[in-house]
Image (cartoon, rainbow over all chains, first blue to last red):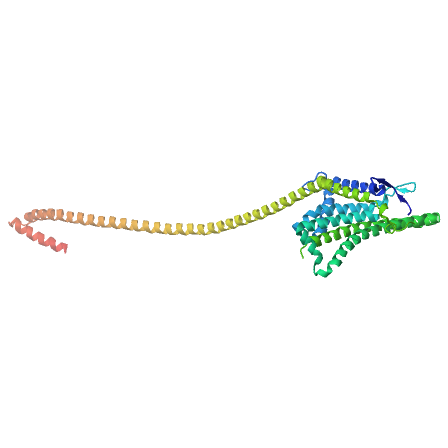
Length: 236
Length: 170
C-alpha cells in the first residue's frame, strides 16, 4: 500500500480529504441508485421498482428480526440507508482507486477505522437516544445494573466492546481485502509477464470474493446495530 | 508498509473533521432518500396493500353473494317443481269435481224430465180414457138402442156399460 491520503487542517481539525471525497462519492452513488429506482413509483411495480422493493424488504426484515412489530418501523429507513451506505462503501475501493502522485484520492471509506467508528457511534447514539426515549433517563441507567448490580462494570465495558467490535469488524474485513488486493498487485509487477498472467485471475477472484464480503459485512453491521438498539429499548 | 493505522494514531492527528462530516453526510443522505425515494415508495406500497386487501374483501363478498344467489335459485327451482305438481293435482281434482257435478246435474235433469213425462203421459191417458169412456157409452147406447128394440131406459144402460168399463180397467 503506502499511498498517503490527502489530509488538510481546517479550524484546528484534521480533514482527510480522501475519506471525505470517497464518502461523497458513496452518498451520490447511493442516492442515484435509490432515486433512479424509485422514480415514478407505480401501483403495478416495474422491474426497477421491484429491485428497490426487494432491498427495502430485505433491510426491513433485518430490523424485524431484532425489533418486531410497530416499534421497529422507525428504524426501517435508518437500516435501509445504513445498509446501502456500507455496501457501496465496501465496493467503492474494489474498482475505483484513482491516485494522484503518491496520494490516493478515493478508496473504500470503510477501510479506515475512523469511518467505521463514526458509523458505529452513529448507531450507538441512536441506541442511547431511543433507549432514553423509551425508558426515561433513570430507567435507562438502571439497565446497566441488570440483571444483578455487580455486573455494572461489565455492562459498561460491554458498551465499549460493542462499539469497538462493531466498528473494527467492518474495518478489518474491508482493510484486509484491500491489502490482499494490493499484495496481488505487487505480485503482478514483481517478475514481469509471468507473474502478471498469474495475478490477473487472482485479482478477479479476490475482487469477486470481496464483493461478497462487502455484502455480508454490510448485512452483519446492520443486523448487529439493530440488535444493540433492541437491547436498549427492550425492558428486561 | 506503514504501521497499523490504529497503533499509529495520535490524538492530534485524528481526523475528527471526517467524523463530523460523515455525520452530516449520513444525515443529509438519509433525509434526501427519505424525501425522494422512501416516502413515495412506502406510500405506494401502502396504497397497494390497501388495494389488495380491498380487492380480497370484495372478492370474498362477491363469492358470498354468488353463493346465496345460487342457493336461492336452487330453492326456487325445487319450489317450482313442487308447485307444478300441486297445480297439476289441483287441476286433476278440480276436473274430477266438475265432472261429478256435471254428471249429477245431468242425472237430476233427466229425472225431472222423466217424472214430468210420466206425469204428462198419465194425465193424457186418464184424459183420453175419460173422454173415451163418455163417447163409448153414448155410442154403445146408440148402437144397443138400435140393435135391441126393447126399450131399456137410458140410465139402466149407462150403469151396465160403466160396470163393464170398470171391469176393463182392472
